Length: 278
Image 1 (tube, rainbow, N blue to C red):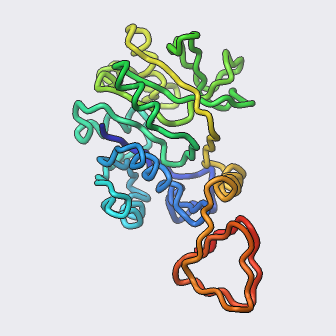
Image 2: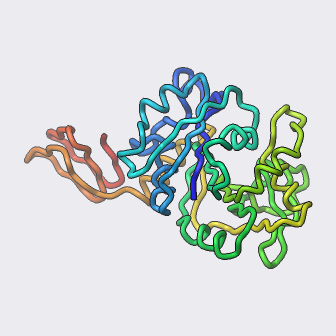
Image 3: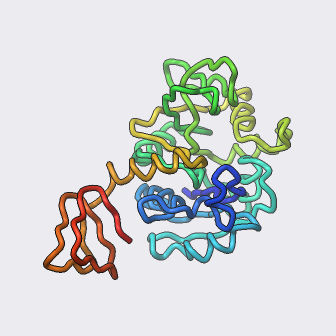
């Protein structure tokens, strides 16, 4: 099993934070957003990872993230010359993926969910595609799935004015090699991009095995500043591990879950719960 993480795009919705850098490298709780996805995949046993990069920010992503050794992974970098859609990214990555089943993970999304159960089901049922979903209050802003009571996907609708469900696609997809055939059959959408939803819909129309499952935890698309701030709060609230690796003098107090990074020095200070210092 392989994986690709999409880390291209220009991050226009996050400017000015992304005027000079990749949106996937914006830190949440002192760690680049992209790295959360890498760690999730490695925790699920997937260590052969391709990261899709853009000409504008690819060098920065590569320099910051490295060859994967720090994560226990092997990372390859795949250049997508233009932001021509998610399905186009898969097409560009085909020489890396070959005929392997794979996970596609959007690099600016944060998901609280264990991928292992979804991987096991995907493999056991020999599915062509498995999409992850989350209930949302505003489905008009997302790609939305319609599925039957057995978990089979019947239809995907992109940003519907009248949503047929409240189940949004969360940006994590599991595919086998049949997705490449589907992508070869679709045409660019009205916005000039090859849409992964169109490719999945092609599989559905061909009566392939396409299913969906709801995640139980939270999901955050960090492409906008308000969600980015919420992501920082949620990560500190749910994932912060209290550890002191720096120096704290005798006049300081550390109260509750506080993470202090190596190389930090705390003097004459009181630091209270849910704080991460690099």
